[in-house]
Image (tube, rainbow, N blue to C red; front, side):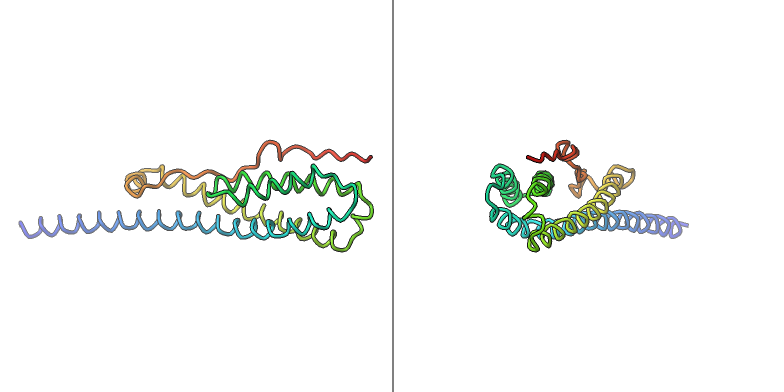
Length: 186
């Protein structure tokens, strides 16, 4: 009889440990998915970041191109370069997106620039990268949402705490970037 009780206790402990390991492994999986999703965004942001100097160089070649527009793009690119964590990079990437939108809108006022093959290629490249960023941002936000739900649900909550897992921030667009770009032909 005592052997049955001891075997039952041992089996119960084994099942509890297996359950805790399953929860731990699941939390590791969702954490890695969030990190992977961010890394995918970061790769595309880096590619866009590398295209910006080329776009600026083409625009600078045109006399009278609005200096303030170029400076805002340069400043936003620099802000991204100095960002040290995903939240700062998200914010800086949003500023760069807005600055690039402004640059491309202002470029509409320059017929010679609009027809420049270099400018058109760079504009298409940056636009394609923006589309890829949007797709990856959606996947990232889905991954963060799953992660945030998992670490707040019982029983995962009891394993997530000792693992030091904290809620992550969704990739959100800044309010200023939601505004329409005003195009003024002078």
